[in-house]
Length: 231
Image (tube, rainbow, N blue to C red; front, side, top):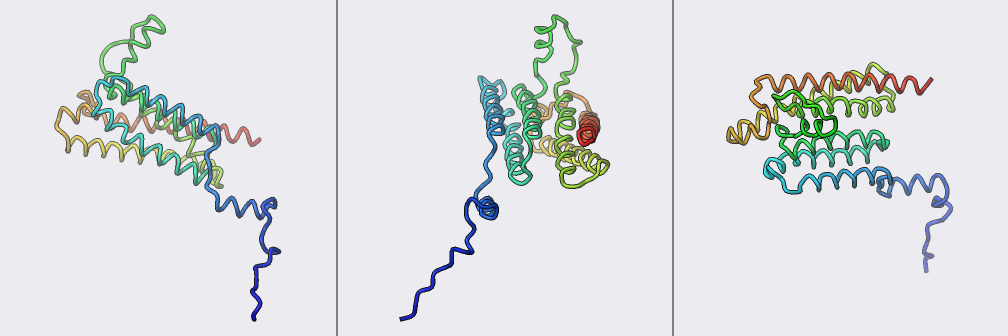
């Protein structure tokens, strides 16, 4: 009768060794660190609160379709790149701005009332500029995340700066094309409610310019900050 061979345990890495931990880490799913989980839960709570008695539920839901895609992309990036908590929070801060804007479909955010309550001053009337703040924040908050990701993968300061700004500008332009598609697909009133142009024919160009300005500033601060910390 032939002997039944059994695999030798000599070639099986122990769980406590470095090889065993590396092998187990390759198999086990990467879990979100505790700080990331807390930040994500806080953001989810803010989104839930923003749905209390919505004034424009259909438009708000359409805006949050992008929120769902953004959170999915953030979790994918976290799994692939292991983003530090600071980068993770910067993305969620931007999504919080978007959530606030979506609550009032961008055009009707009562920031003037908030400012008056806090300071007693009355801002000048006219166009609601909260959407401009969101576009500027898109560049300002996300460019440092991109700079850090490229710098940690060996890119020089100039290349990391340029690529971060390019990504912000190109994705901002794609979003404006998406809004143009919305304008073509929906009825004029519904398209205006979603896009929030408020009668400005140069709205798309101004939005992209603000995203570019925010990206240039955010990327510059990120490059200078990382250079200072490495000295």
